[in-house]
Structures are given as structure tokens and as C-alpha cells.
Length: 337
Image 1: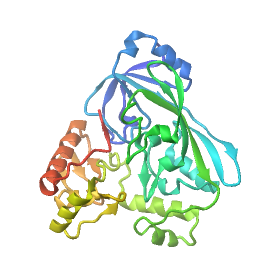
Image 2 (image 1 turned 90 degrees about the horizontal axis):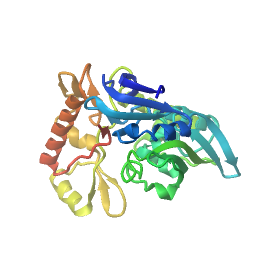
Image 3 (image 1 turned 180 degrees about the vertical axis):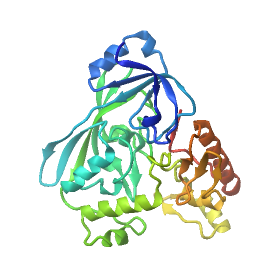
Image 4 (image 1 turned 135 degrees about the horizontal axis):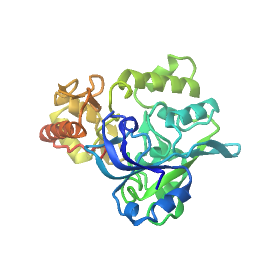
């Protein structure tokens, strides 16, 4: 089929800036094109990966299958009342462009998530979160298409099985549904969440507390802590912050009295993975073409011409050292292919 590209380079479609290719590549904005493609048993039986802008993926080698990329665009206000607004957003819209749109309209609920790279369609898959907010709180429903059957389905918030950096699209239905659009329910009334760290103080540096200054503060913090992937290849936080139960945490705290933590719920504790990694001596580590970012040890970086497997090998070394010292097995946020 003429709209399938073969041996397609993915260098510009992964933020690790890895020079990898895929056997077949297919972009679509009309669902029928995807349905027609997958009627062909050759394409239907290939391994598949769904790709947005590649901000949470690590290719370890050439992908011998079909990469599918939805390119649905558009931001449209569907419904508005005294308290909230429903906004329909195409899956290929830039996430940060959407947060800017919401801030300019004084629509509240995603302002702390400003600056996160990637697309709107990827946001619910990962249940992106930052500075005390998670996207799941603002999702009304997700419209997706089943790759195998071509059936379209709306997944409402409770259907998505959202968890910490997790959803049904990352677990049970991984690579089975392609997200086409997301409907967000945002508040029209100010409802700020400034409890995370020193976020409130950083916002006040820009003046009064409002959505515009929250966005400015969050973007400033991110710029201070996180590398620009256009210059230094990375996928943001490589590891999740581990969550442990109370008895394990108390035992750990007795050995490491200064260990930082957040209450995850009434019985569990979330420990910053960055602290664990730094205490194991990995901050600013470099080894040939790969390394650990000097300002944030959660971030693994491509120092130039790295291979995906080099990054995986470094991640394993870090994870093994944390396990040995603290008894905690780190889980990856990044999708390793």
C-alpha cells in the first residue's frame, strides 16, 4: 500500500534521539485507512507499536514490525456550563500546546502539567503527572479504535483503570487500542494545587497566584531541572518513584533517617527514586555515549550516538545497585521496545 513507508527512520520521532528504523511505518488521520490496512493479513499479523512523538519510548534496535502513528489534530470546546467545560482534543496535538490553550482560556486542572513533552494521545496512556497533578483527574473520556476489529470505543474515566503512571492502555490493552481523541473536563473556577514542594513560593516569584503564573513557574522549574531533548536525548524520568508499605518503610527509615517520602495513601509511602539513585552514586555519571543527568538523576541521557541497548544496560546497573543497597526494585516509566 502506497501510504505505508518501508525502512522508515525514527530519529525525529523519539526524544532519546536514537538513530533507529522500523520495517514499516503508517500515519493516519482517518480511521477507515487503518481499518483497510489491517484487512491485509500481512500487516495485521506483524508486531505493532503505536507512536506519538516518542517521548516515553526507548528502541533498543530496529523494530521489525509496523509502527502506527495517529495524526489527529484539533482543539474544540464541546460544552460549557457555570462550573466546567468539555474540550475535545486530537491525539496528535502537542500536550504543552494544549496546556497553553487551557491557561489562556482560564480553564483549570492541567496547569501543573505544563511543559511535559509528548502528545495529547500519550497523556492518558501514561497517566502523566507532575507537581501534585495527574491528567486522569481531568479526563472525561478517551475515544480509541481497536487495532484488531476496527471498532471504536469511548473509555470514560473509570473505564481507564488509571494508576500511578499507568492505565488500561499501558497494561491490559497495551498496543491494542489507538487513541484518536481525548475529551477533557476542566474547571472554570480557580482550583489550584500548590502543595507540592516549593511550588507556591515559585509561583509568587511571578506575582499573584493565577493560572498564568503557575504555568510560568512550572515551565521555569522544568527548565532548571530537565534537559532539552532537542540538545540532549532523554525521555524524562526513566524510573517510577517506588511505593512501599508501612512496615518496609519504617525498617528503611531506621537505617536511613533522612530518607524523603510522600504519603501515597493511608498505608503506603512513595520514595523519590532520584534520592535512591543519587545515594548510590549515579548522579552525573557518564560512560561513553550514555549518562545520568547532573541536575536530576532520574533522567538517563544520550551523550551522542548512543544505542538503545546502551541506555538499557545503564538502567539495569542503576536498578541493581538500588536493589542491593535499599532492597527496592525500581520500575521503569519508559516503554522499552
